[in-house]
Image 1 (cartoon, rainbow, N blue to C red):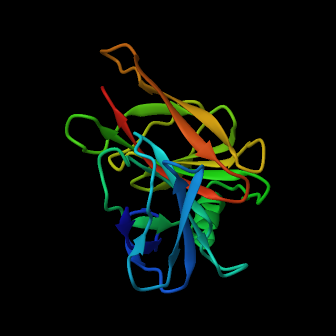
Image 2 (image 1 turned 180 degrees about the vertical axis):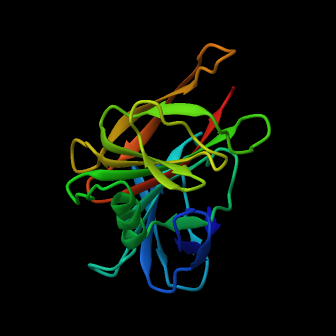
Image 3 (image 1 turned 90 degrees about the vertical axis):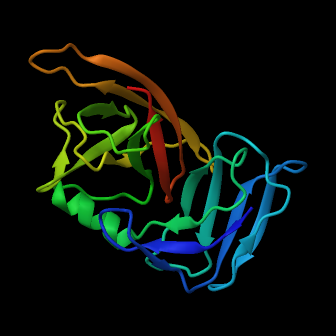
Length: 214
C-alpha cells in the first residue's frame, strides 16, 4: 500500500495539506503482526505485506514529540485498495471542538472522528442518532457550530460526529462500539442502523467513515 500523509487543517476534518515532517506508518501485516514504513515528509510511503481486510486500522505516528499532529488511526479497506492517503488529526483543532461544547480533552483517553455516509451513494447522512457509551463527550457538527449531545442530537448534512475522551484498555487500545439509528420524526418511527466497531487508543485520534444502510 502506498500514499501520502496529510494534515487535517480545520474543523471540517476534510481539508488537508501535505504533512511536511517525518512520521512512521504502521498497519496489520500479512505474514507478521505489524508492518511499518517511513514517511519522509514528501515522497509516498510504501507499506509491504499489508494484511488484506475490510478494516485495517492504519496508524501514522509523527516523529515530532509534543507537536500539533496527533498519532492517528485511520480505517482503510486494504482488501480493496492499494493506494491510500492518510490523515493526521490536529490537537489544536480537536481542542477547538471541545471548547465549543464547553469540555476539555484529556490525553489519558482516545479521541474519535467519524463521518456517517450512505452505503449506496457515499453521501453524508443527516438525521442519524449515533452513540458511543464509552465516550465522555459527543459533539455533533451543525450549520451553526458544534452541539453537545443531550440525548437528542442528530447528524447534520456533513454526517460528522466527534466522540471525545473515549475510554480505552491496554497499550494497543481497544475496540469501542458505535450504535446507529435513524431518529424518529413526527411521521416515522426510529429505524435501527446497526453498529460499528472503532479502534480507540489512549492519547491518539481515530478517523473513519462509517457506511450506513439506511
